[in-house]
Amino acid sequence: MAGYPDQVLRKCREKLLPLAQELSHPHSLAFALGFATVLHHLRREMQATQEMAEATIVLSTEHGFPHCLAQGVVYRGWALAEQGQRIEHIPYER
Image (cartoon, rainbow, N blue to C red; front, top):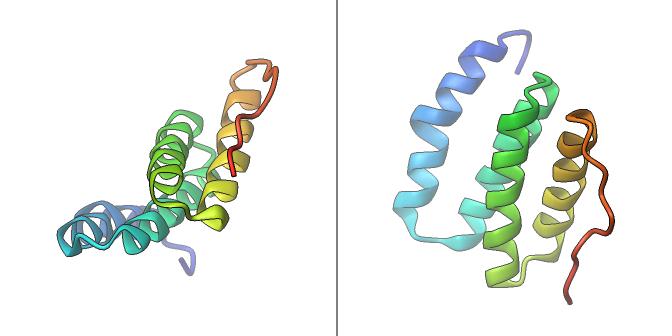
């Protein structure tokens, strides 16, 4: 990211995510969504972090990607906590 967060975000939206979707390769898409989640987290964009994390969770649950799922759950929890929402439990299925 090298100090250019706006450029990285633009490239993520314009190139990384569309390419991952076009490939029709679920693990590549899960990885790209995870990257976008972290990017929004580093920018302290709570709503965008939550949205990307939830998309990561859905895809990772559907295809059985435990690492990406865990990442999505952690960042979703952060986003919810930052928005003042209390989390009763974190759904996690094996």
